[in-house]
Amino acid sequence: MRKSYPRCLPLSLIILYLLLFVAACKKDKTAPQPPPITNYAKLGLYELISTTNRRVFIPITKIGTVSINYASIFDTGSTGMTIDATNILPASMITSSGIIVPGDSVVYNGITVTSQQSTISYGGAGGSITTEYGNLAYAPVTIGDANGNITTGRIPIFLYYKAQDVTNNKTLIAHSNDVFGVGPGTSFASSAIGSPLSYFTLPTSVTSGFRLGMFQTASFTTGGTYVPGLLVIGLTPDDLNSSGFIMHNLNYYSQGGYSPNIPATINYNGTDVSALLLFDTGNPSVTFVENEAASANTLTLPANTIVSLTTSSGFTYQYTTTSNYNLTQVLRPSYSGDPRSIFSIDFFLSNEYLMDYQNHRIGLKNN
Image (cartoon, rainbow, N blue to C red; front, side):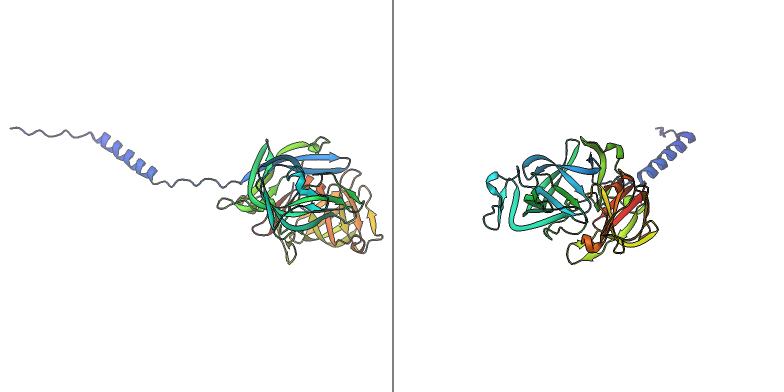
């Protein structure tokens, strides 16, 4: 019997097959690209103006399981969230002398109100002082509104029943002094309270903190304007290392923890002043420069005065006073009772701001 043998493939087909096989092997060995590291969340803020006072607000739309709609002052100059108990707790729990808490704590619709009472004050340095009276509480909080929002876990907050303008002996209307304090360290109302933005559980390689975009002058309107994406929560390696921020390490103190005050030199009218600077979105209009050698307890710098600063880390900034922007007063600390030089919200019209909670740093960037 005659044996049959398979025919040989043409040489050209063998070469083509081998090339395809090698290419396929090479493709299989290519490592998959890791997903990009992104920020945790981006939220918009509302910009509002009344005469020369500018405010930036963040909406609070739920506490515990209670749906609400209140605007909270976005404040880099303080730490911790405060909110009026009105329309959050039952009216029967709120009296003129305090919140009724039987025992150590009481739970209402997902809000734990403790019996730990305290006060917290805002203002000073030449302005009026407002004091809030209330209790330490814990609850999940929804930050933002239908334009974009995010919900925290159960976090500590300060739930107040009364806000008093101490300087003018006047009780403020409910929710008119709600504060969203995003500074470092802890609240002076309670060491248990930190920034509401510091409690998120973040993905690997994302650092606890936030980045604040430059505010837009034209968006400050009497009715309030929503500006998307101003607040970026969670910092990427690019934010920290290659985005142009000049970083400032913060000092730790036994009261309040890490301080947002940054050493610097301020110059005005040819006068150099050693200063501790606080960049404060909660200060709506007037920058206060503290100088014990000033010619009077209070001195308002006239329009067209050039003011400059240089921080200990080399960040520099210069502005010119006008009748509407960059209003500036020079105060003697012995008169104001505050050694800090506090820059107003106008600083944020020309600069970006970064808060690194994890590494206890503040970043500043010119634009």
